Length: 363
Image (cartoon, rainbow, N blue to C red; front, side, top):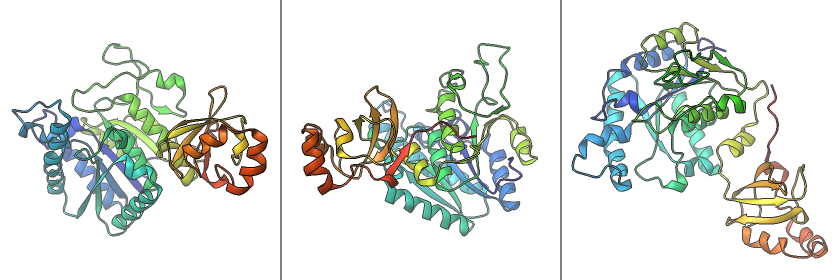
């Protein structure tokens, strides 16, 4: 699949493209991207824009403040967000809408479905969604932390078929191109193996929050949903004309032949576990009380937990029907008592429809 055959595209823009000097928004690198969006829409394609840059855009307004302060960064994000949205709106002669999200929004199933409905409605009306993490209000336990992964979550939520992640390098190399002149650009990646992840280094930009590793994490999230993913150089003006012509100017990540079901994908890649259940079984469709060996963490009924076996192997993520307090009590009881007196009265700890089992990639 190429851009030519894609119908719904998510494009992610980083802070270095928005505010390269951290002294407010600049249009230097954005015009080509805006033209790409306009041309995609002219071809009948739907586009969603995930745009970083609020903190970098607002930085110059806080000259006498400690910019490492969390409170100042939040204020910079609030001030810079309006500047960034205003800049994007000047490029377009069609309406746009702003969505500010946190991981807390995405990992809550009801709010996630509400986000999906909003995105679908905006696209139906020909409105361009411009999405960013809500850095002005988010906390450590509620934030995604980088817009690479956010863009993949948005692409999955929007049922997109293509994700384009703009970087400051041409794509994924087999070694650091800044240190190795013989580094080779990988044209196509069929599967994200541990060896592929080992090729990544840290961020090459002093402005953004993500490096190549977060882009690979995003590619894994997207491709497992059946979304072809590109990492391209957003600073190169030829990148976008090549994409429009069906070429691959960077690294293309092939989607799973058998994508995860939507609910399983959400639980695997978007919902974050609030605790752990240690169980005896290595395989299961449903989890009962007498399977539990130990309970780690503090979670409420309905929250997502990680399920491991006694060897530490990750088996699944799932929604627990009961709180950690009750499950701790059950785990400490005699197995026969649990089976005879408890299991029948409270039902399964995890229901079959609320489990995302970790499996080998199907391709």
